[in-house]
Length: 117
Image 1 (cartoon, rainbow, N blue to C red):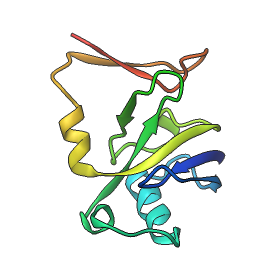
Image 2 (tube, rainbow, N blue to C red):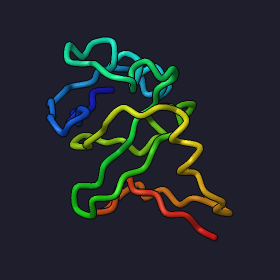
Image 3 (cartoon, one colour):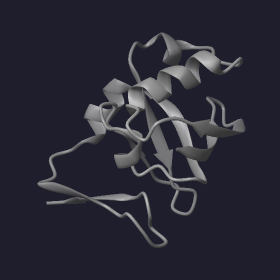
């Protein structure tokens, strides 16, 4: 599976990437490899332990932290996505107490999730 991403680094600098991996690759593995391969990685984020990805929505300015145990095919990350690295601890903080989560799989909101109470 090949996915074109924009990596948003701490401080706001970006880098366009082409990610080639199996659709069953866990998000935590992808985040770890992005951190290890980025020559500009610095700061506490990379020393925080386990990492995951945050997906940014450029249209709304919102973002969501992806479950590090989910696989690429199920994470809602598509070509053109803007992502950044995030500590796994942020995923549990953003999970909330929703009864269910709706993941949009096609259309203009593809990749976005909505909490359903």
